[in-house]
Each structure stands twice: as C-alpha cells, then as structure tokens.
Length: 104
Image (cartoon, rainbow, N blue to C red; front, side, top):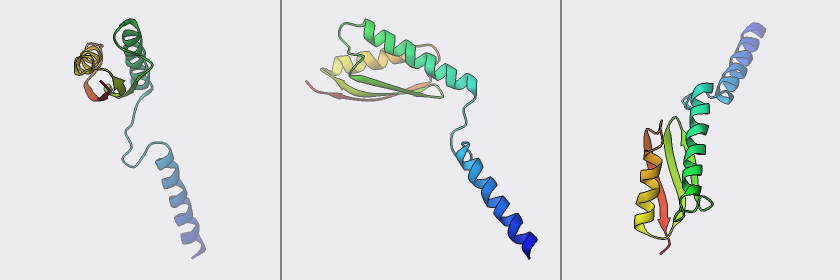
C-alpha cells in the first residue's frame, strides 16, 4: 500500500511539472520559434516607429508562432488597415489579428 501511495504522489508531481513546462495543451515553441517571434515583433515595432502616421507607442505587438496580434489605438480606419498591411509585410508573419481601436 505504501508503494502505491508513493508511486501516485510521484506521478502527480511529474504531471504538475509537465504542466509548468508547457505541457497539457499549451502551445510548444522551440528556441528558434521564440527567436523568430522576437525578430518579427522587433521588425514590426521598428516599421511602426518609422512611419510618421502610426504611433509605435500606442500599438502593442504580440507575436506567437508567427501569428501577430495588434492592440491599441489609431486615429482612422485607413491607419488601422495600414498597420495591418505593415504587419503582413514582415517576413515570417503567418496571420494578423487586428484588434486596433479607432479613436477618431
């Protein structure tokens, strides 16, 4: 009985470690993918900063496995679309989730 109890405690502990390490349904990213995501985010932030109509400070860029999410504020629908097109132009971007809000 004692051996069964110890074995079950070890199994529960290992399952907890697996969950902490990104197991059980969490997206798995290799070091290369993480570096690619950082590169995409950096290039997009630089492109936003270089554009006089867009504010890199007001647009948050989140990249996971090549999928980019834009959040923040822009003044017009045209600028919202421009930010999305800029994101799509970055090498390695697979999709863009444009959640930018138009403040007018």
